Image 1 (cartoon, rainbow, N blue to C red):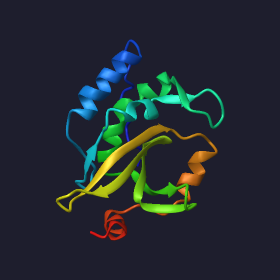
Image 2: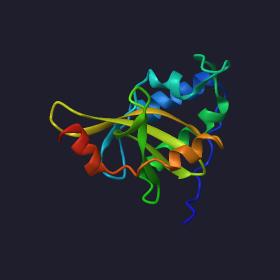
Image 3: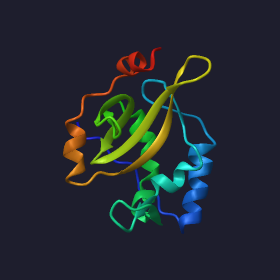
Image 4: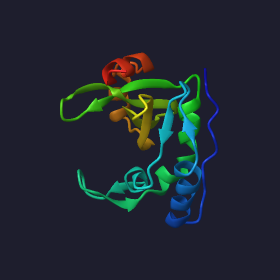
Length: 157
């Protein structure tokens, strides 16, 4: 089934996108389709909406391309037909059930890291989002499917 894409977000400049992120994502409550609360930390803006100008360098340039898709994040997390894959643990060089890569629109991915609150409830933190390129997207698709129960088992809940 083809999921209709949300509109792109067209704002004036980096400051406008940052303000939008803080107002619409950081300061409001969001949940996944499984009902897990997702937190959007203000400091994640620089990671999610900047890109590196040198290979493997720091994210040092604002990415208008990424920022225009900011409005796709929440619909990706709530889309019933989205595909969720397990994330990747770079240190251990293996898939990780406590992180996810959600895909609903083209190759646009939203990455979350899951944890357990002091109340014993599973929550998620937004890590980043981007359009996966032709090399990265097939690797993502080879990952195991993410599901909440496997995540809870990994987290010991």
